[in-house]
Image: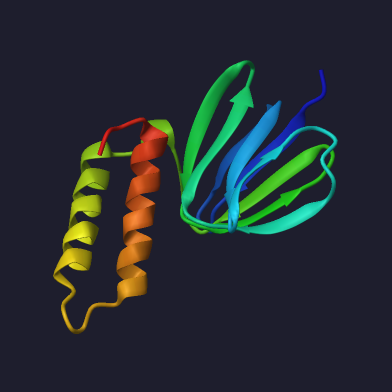
Length: 134
C-alpha cells in the first residue's frame, strides 16, 4: 500500500515524522485531504485539527495555523504551534476557551477582537484534538 511521509514542524521542534496513509488538514477555506499521489500543493492553514492515519489508527494534532506543502509522497506542515492530542492539557484548554469567550462577550473598548477570536479558535482546536467536550 502506498504511503506518505508526514512531517509536522513548529519553530520549536519537529513534532512528528511518520509514514501515514492519509492526512486531513484545516486549510484556509476548509478542510482538505491528502492521499498518496496527490498533486503538488502549497496552502495556508487555519487553527484546527490535523488528522492522519498511521497503521490503521487515526491520530490528531491541534495546529494554530501555518502552511501545508503536499506532493505525491510527502506532506510537510509548518505550524505556528502544534500539539499531539495526548500532550494537550484539557483543563488548561477549557480555561483558555472560557477566557476567550468571556472577552468576546464583554467586548471591552480596548479589546483586540482578532486576537480574542484567534485564542478562541486555538482553544477549540485543542479540545477537539484531545476529544474533550467543551
